[in-house]
Amino acid sequence: MKNFNINRRHFMKGASAALALSTFGAYGLDLVNPSRPYRVALIGAGWYGKSDLFRLMQVVPVEVVALCDPDRNMLTEAGKLVAARQKSRKTPKLYGDYRQLLKENELDIALVGSPDHWHALQMIDAVKAGAHVYVQKPISVDVLEGEAMVAAARKYGKTVQVGTQRKSTPHLIQAKKEIIDKGLLGKVAHVEMYCYYHMRNNGNPPVQAVPDYFDYEMWTGPAPLRPYDGLPHTRWWRTFEEYGNGIMGDMCIHMFDTARWLLDLGWPNRVSSEGGIYVQKEGKSNIPDTQTAVFEYNGLNCVWQHRTWGTAPDPEYPWGLTIYGEKGTLRMSTMKYDFTPTDPKSEKLHGEVVYEKEKYPEDLKEDRIELNAAPATRGHMLDFLAAIDKGSKPIADIAEGHISTASCIIANLSMKLGRPLSYDPGTKTVLNDPEATALLARNYRGPWNRNMLN
Image: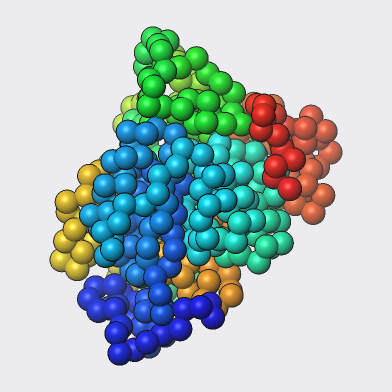
């Protein structure tokens, strides 16, 4: 960016500079030493929104000028945490409506960390307002929202990075370079992806009055308005189809996106899925507790399986992916990787997660931080900044995030309709299936409408 010229006499030192230097060479120092701090805002000041913001603050000078959340208590607390971290010690301006935030502040970067049902409108409005955007995955809750997000990023010439940070995970990058790219797997013909975490909230809280500090109408936005039964924060909202795409959209997207990156895969030819609520029937949750999906490519299937009950087949890999090649098998997760060659005389390879606790000791004091993901997110932020600086596409460009998100959504549609589906991104239709095509866009609750996506 022309407004961020380097002044090497006052360059940023420490762990962030070392990370940038190791990642990008001498250019990395330019990257993390802009002539002025980036003006940043966070939309969605909950757990992971703050985590993304704090990782950005660790790698480049920023001034967090504004925060937005419909929960005033959460927003006020986030303001205090940010003020304690930023160099100016200023408390950002606090907003309950992201549209007012975008109207009143000139931003370089907007982080979108809100629940999934808000991602499309907020990302599109942010690029319209002139900001580059880091948006959490999945990027959308319906396929045509994703198409609109890609179109908006291109129309307004803004960099949009998706929070699929497995592509920036150090040990997974190492596995790609040392095993896959060097051909140690040989021909790859099958991929298994899986999650066996017991992560599906399934309670029966009573309907109750909305607290005065929480704007439930604004939190709900374009989604259906469920009877209020407690704060939806953390994982309660994820247990409902009204706001997201279930565990398929939350966990499969990470591993499917990783498989596509590792093996250079685009849109699947066909998607099929089966599943439902087979065991955990006692609560309000309406997302599947059991689901299998198959993403078909030429000569290769990527198969997903999740269960939120029972035990994992391999306790060492409860969430991850396994790539099967003619010369060996590669198991990968956010924690490690293991390569087992078919030739017993060949060397087994193993890699472990990088934590960077010594470089970033503040991580150890952060509430609910995913320590294993922090280095990946820092690297992901550096890649995002480099793309902004160069006017290039980041590693998790919005178009790639759309393929991974939409494919998972189509899997859910396949499960509901009971048949395989083939999506055509050229025509934005499901081939030879008008019923499925009609489900590519959901209805918005007034006063929100889909024209706002344009």
